[in-house]
Length: 513
Image (cartoon, rainbow, N blue to C red; front, side):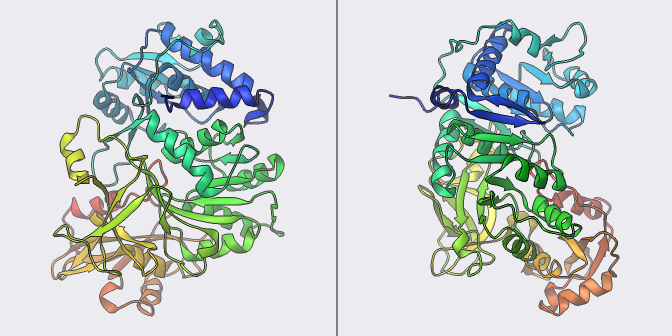
């Protein structure tokens, strides 16, 4: 049997297209042949440094071509990665690495202080520097790799081996490590080109952090086809547009707040670029506001827009295709190839068409459970179906509509209120660029609807005006009872708004609104 491993797919791509550019980063180009040799050296360097198949390695780095090669080298050596948000505190780093039972931590020198502090909290954790200046006791991976052969490492990697422990964003509690095998991700890599329509000659813009599963996975998928990835160190809207034009980028995965930033950047330009090279746009991780969607469709008429519903644990579950964007505005589409969904009520039975219930799913790329958390794994599965804690409904054509996160639902006076509906309403106000709706303590109703809005640059709409704007579109019980303006919303590494952080500001103090 041929094993479905990430390393094998990358090697086959390099063998078929060794002279084609694989990675473009800050003006430098690396061919598939060069990238294959570099990742092989890194795989051997990990083994030279004492890491073995099955060991867990934490990585805290900013986006770079070298970071991408580290991910591929670890896959070839059978070393499972714990990819860390570079904004993490030392305590957060220590929590993830301790929970993962990691053997070592690889860091960019900019994060050396946090790495050292975290290592003091995790017994026997070894430290490696990626490159550059480091303490004398920390080996530098780049130097060790330079001394290694470019031949493939002798590691018996199987498709059932752990590829990455991908920790969830922790929007509803302590982060938990999703067990992602080579087979899980390899199946996704095979599905995505079929679902979204990209191929070996396409060029992806990698704008998100590599420690987030979707941008990392989609970039690896493009490389496994023999295509090219144009990487950004960090996302900047104006720079993203320049890179698309200069490098003739053909597709990109961006989360909704990135699209909002791009639209805001375009509003400041005298002429809007059409970018005819751009033919595929993907949006996921959180709902795409209708107003932003309309701007995307108008600004990039040559690009087909796909919205999808997916997760670290399952890959892509449903997708709304370009031809359905205007007739199924708030939908996330129908199940993709090999995926199934069902909507269950509180009693575990299927709800009627159009009724709201908890979304359960099955897909070949499903994760293997949560690491060292059998109770969380058991809670996520029911008779072979998995739930991510989302509420939704299906229409008569089988299109799925995400209503909200189960734990974000506001229960006011015994009535369920879905924040996403209110957020969609307030985002139609011209002075608001982002919004989050949460439930806050209320003596009469238990919870009351509270609005947190981010105004457009130079605008300061009155909260009373925004509440009145919602009242014109919504039933009275859904209309926010209070609100505030903020310069930004707290976000996870995946770009999702951390509503828990907003709620905690109210519930931890017991202040009634």
